[in-house]
Image 1 (tube, rainbow, N blue to C red):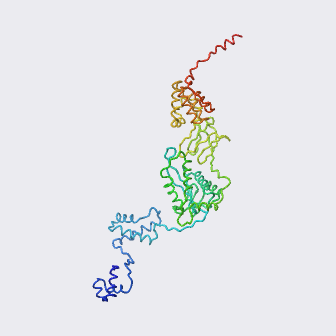
Image 2 (tube, rainbow, N blue to C red; image 1 turned 120 degrees about the vertical axis):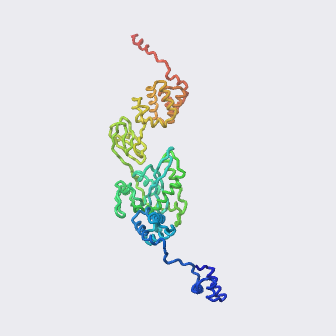
Image 3 (cartoon, helix red, strand yellow; image 1 turned 180 degrees about the vertical axis):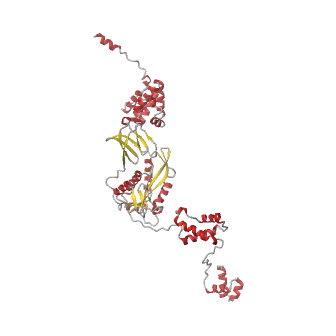
Length: 500
């Protein structure tokens, strides 16, 4: 190979010092033809071979080509890499060559056979107020001290890059619709086109090409807001690459460190603030910031309907012997007076309401999962009052008892010691029934006062509670004698009668 120094020496020796071509060839070791070529033109450097020879790999080339051709009909994530080709050659054909040789050939062969794994993308310039992308992601948060797996609903404008992110317990259709409703409100209008994967909450059946059979309820939702859904080809998530990247961005920036909140609603309020504060930067190739484009886009969106989509489901159920109704494989309690009655259940994304005729008889936070029970104590306390022996084993009491304050346990022990187990439990249930019409803080404060005053009945607790709520707070130090007043002498009434 001729170096730049040798090229310079040959031309200087001939043109400056007048040396003959034969002498220069003898001094440099190059042929006379090479010297003549140098003297005729500029330095061209090293020229690679037009055709690469593979003497060791040659017997295996047809096998490699066959493997790579077969990959055209295989999933992209299950195709041969150069390393896999090399390992198969060693294991199945006792190949003795180097991995570098195999890598070089596989790279050339993939280009020749059209099985290169890299996609080529078309630069895009989205129109204002036309398209948005929607997707789901996974995340973890700590809600009420419990680590909870959640779903991230993400909606992103293709024009501005502004986005909305919300958390839901699941990917069910009501959560899907609620995410859209919150998203349209956030952006100030409806995007005429929404781009999705082939979500089962939206797509019932995938047909040939771009045709889809939509879920009936999703088709109604789409018709209400008047947008056009566009679904990606199978396995082509990059067709909505903006929101695909948003899922990862939101998880890395909004959910790190793992957020702690008392409730899901509180967590979503924090996420909303994060989404509103995002956008003070410019996206590559844009002249304005995300927030400036976001404000500009609002006027180009479809207007929101005057009435928001109801997004509820209804079901007819029958209350069972446990005074519960089963909805979505979970149980919700109603007052025991409605046991065995037919009721109507209204399901919202986060709440369950139960009606008997037109009367609402129960309201619960919605459960997600299977075989969970939402039991409200006020629905069962009157029945337990009649059956005090069931107090310890009642599921509703066991669930409540794991969270109630220590003062209630002390009150129960005191009642049982003073009046015996059965009467003590009944008195204690009467105290628990006060929770239906009074705040927990007021009741627990009254219980503490009753304990410190030596009171031994539910009437003492109720007396303290009512006086405080009426603003007549006073000292209750004399309550230790609440149960010790002497019984009245009623014989006098007989004497009055006898006088006649």
